Structures are given as structure tokens and as C-alpha cells.
Length: 319
Image (cartoon, rainbow, N blue to C red):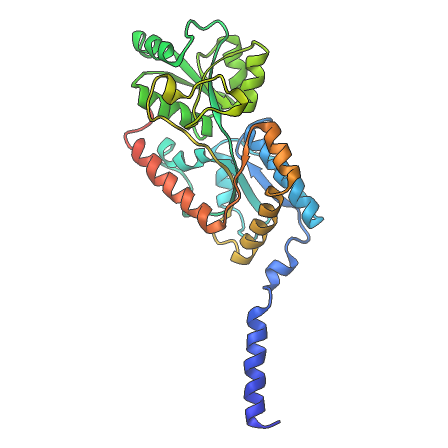
């Protein structure tokens, strides 16, 4: 073989090698199951979305994908400290972005220690109160709270939850003093309002509409910018009392920082494909949520931007 041909062969080989799919992505997943850690209890919106995503990925990969509930900071910490090989993932809410506000000595950084894969869904929330609450509107609730500072309380599945952020932002906007009562999970928080143990809770709209129809709670307003078709007779908080108020939650899939990029891209591609199917759209519609497929880069930006924005809003602490 002439020198010229040898050089040409070398160039072609390099080009072909550059187009090859990295070995890690070719063989992923194989062997051990893929775990999706949910830092909330079973039955929460996060848990439900994680199980829908896990079923779709398992079907796509023909490989075991399991959901593991590890509520609270310990669950998130376990993911941050896990081996970044794609076999430990986390599906969480945008409550993740205020972790450092809640706990100044966090063993992880909510931005630097995680790689975004894709948001999975946006979940609208509705402000509910006990069925016998004297407040028939958001304005009346605010007036009650101002008349008795610190006497009313609100429920949440914990301070790192999406619904907690909604309540904290509502408190700030309304300039009211409410006491926070954290529960083990969303089901327990909802039950507390039904029983009258707490006076307010922001719940996912699918849960809220069912409870309202059953007469178990009263809906005062939705937190979205516009009315939701699921509860079209329920005003927005902006309409009812606080012009300009809106709150959008998201739930997304993440991996530990350092997870090979080709694996992040593969999971993103396969999950995004699933989120665009009629099957997923139907399942999400039944839950009152909207699919939110994005690129890993776009999700990383959302995580970073929301963390910076909410940390600025609550820089003096969550009061």
C-alpha cells in the first residue's frame, strides 16, 4: 500500500470512528436495573409521573426500570452521591430548586450536582380550603389571615415540594402570616384539609377537581396565569385577588452530574419520544397535567434559572 493510500485509509478510519455511537450508549442499559428515585411518598404527583415514565422506558428498553420512594433530602442526597453511570436517576419537582433555601448545610448543590435529562410534565395547582371554611374566595381568605396573623396554617408534602413553593409565593404576594404544617406526603396533606386540620393547600388540579366534585373541599382559585379547562368556573388567583400572580410547576428527570453525555442524550431521546405518544398524552390528560419534553440543555437552564430566581425571592428565608 502506498503512503498516499495509507494516509487516505487513516483519514477514512478516523471519520468512521467519529461517527460511531459511543460504546456506553450502545450497551446502556444492561445488567443491573435502572432506578428512578422519587424524593416524595407513594401516591404523590411526582410518584405517579415517575411510574408512568418508568413503564414507558422499560417497554422501550426491554429492561427493568424501578421506582424507589425515598422522601426528603436523604433521597435527593443519595442520588447526588450515587455513581454517575445512568443506573440511578431522580424524578423530582421544581421544589428541588429551593433546597438550599430550606437547608443552608445541604450535602449537595441543586444545580452543580445534577444533570437535567428532560422535564416530564407541568402540573397546574389549585388552592383548596376545608368545605366549611368561612373563606368563600381568595380575598376572604387573605382578609381572615390578616385579621389573625399566624393563626391560620397551610399544608404541604414538605418544604422541598412544588406545592410548598406555591404556598410560599402566595404568602409573599398576599403579605400574610401563615404557619407551615409539613406532612409525610401529598395524600396526608390533602386529608388534613378535608378534616379541617389545616386551612389551605395547593393541590394538583386533577386531585382538586375530584375533591371539589365530591364536596370534600372548596376550591378558591387556580395558580396558573389563565383559567384551567378542568375547572373553568374557578378563577385564577390573579383574577380573584392578586393581579400578576402566577405559578407554574414542573416535574423532571435528572441524573447525577458526571453521567456520560451519550447516556443522558439516549434517555432524553427515548423519554421525549414517549412523551409525544398518544398513550402518554391520554394518561397525562387523565391526571390533569401537560407533557413538557425538552432537550437536556434546555432543562439544565431551567434548573439553573429557577434556582437563582427563587433563591433571590426567598433570600431572607421562608417566613
